[in-house]
Length: 222
Image (cartoon, rainbow, N blue to C red; front, side):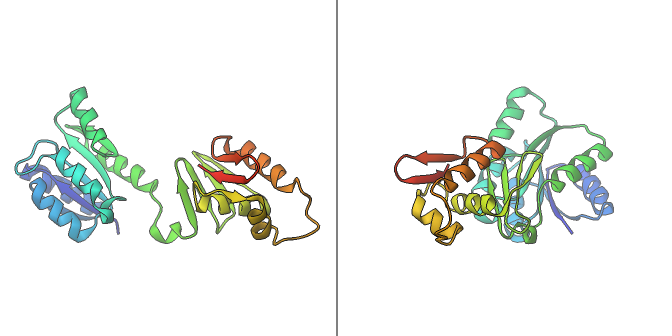
């Protein structure tokens, strides 16, 4: 059951949202100001926070910034739900680290669907094992697949193992000898240009920008 925390200083909105989100099967919590909301968030570690901008004690912008600095809450999705519809308010909310900004009033059915959609994009923790997330890439060692944005590539075994080796330690330069020994296990029948060919094929699929050539040494993942 996904946990949702609603932080808003209007009691009617708190109860209305809590009632409807509970009906949808979410485990819903409420707080009436930023300070209480922050303390509650650290205790329950919600999957998603619905946050107002204008609140007593601590406003939503400051609350969002603090939440994003707490290691246990960095994966928590934050949606601003506010009557403040000015461009500068929305920009400030998104720049503070929020994932979305919704202007009141909004129909509850639309809000629920927005919440469902954004939660669907976040994989469960158990599903993250043996996955590497870098920018818009997801490298899945369990399935030997690479997903870039909405496109999934099924890489051959050696291509995938080479990519995973580099991506597991970004910015580290791997020598050709290291790559050869790990991916090809020092197979003496492997040609000298094999690594280069595999790098070229990987770049053709995921783009040129990720794997950098270090002349005379080897490769690294940026």
